[in-house]
Length: 403
Image 1 (cartoon, rainbow, N blue to C red):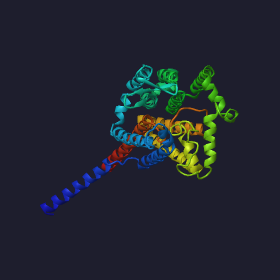
Image 2 (image 1 turned 90 degrees about the horizontal axis):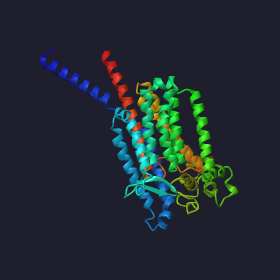
Image 3 (image 1 turned 45 degrees about the vertical axis):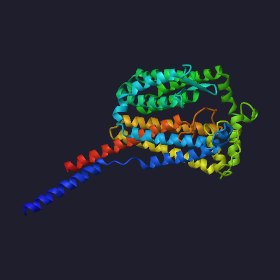
């Protein structure tokens, strides 16, 4: 073989090895998950526009005022998703505790006059001047990041000692207390349920949960009794028609919306309930308006999309945990529980199977805080999936080298 031929074959081998290396380094994002989230956002955007026209008109604004604001929120959310997707999980795992203290600081700011903003009797927002930000949304995400890191660092203690179970809950109890003082009962329930679910998946013992759940049920029952409006909400959803023009007004109007929609709806833009019969039509009761205009079929389709997001997130978490990525696994589990619980509660409230709670429908309801934070959560899921696949490619390349 000539020297020229040897050089050619050598360069060809090097080129092939570089191509193989690039293939191993190229890891695509989770396109199905991103596509389903985009579909939910687009359906939500259309319904926000449809359900808020009369509200915007009453305020003297452009009829599509809320539509365009939601559109901007989605664009900001996509930008935030892309930024978060580029941040390694190692960084998030190291800043969980500082994020919890930041959460406490932000929740404290809400109660300072001039900074906190009160809406409908609840002080849940920080006034930014040009806009407002709902603190409870980002606090739920920070709590999930903290618990995921805690489960990685102290898993042995969690499985063997009660203190390992109570320590993170003790810290989170301060956050729950501040949420209840706002008051934001719904956010407190979602945060507690999500973090408890993560601890269960992390290996906490069943009897610990039985004791804690008993204590929480007693405490929440006491809070309901001491707060007349909460007690009224708990009893009204059982029979809203007993007082349809007062305590049962919201729920009866939502049920009328579902009844009018039947299978295929009355047509996009043709809802009657959104014309000031159904309060918060573009936020908390968006699902009811959508079911009225697009019918039960559309409602089932949206529920199926949410089910896909939740199971996809659980699948990402399971793969990460199996591939020696425990933080990513617990983080994905927490986000799956959060999205699933919040969607379940919102849809349950709309359909009258749960007491009324002020929780948005993820990716769909109007609200910049909710949309942006949910997209950040999806960015974290995509990052977990990226690092898991990167680990797979790295392991397969090592195997090929050994062979």
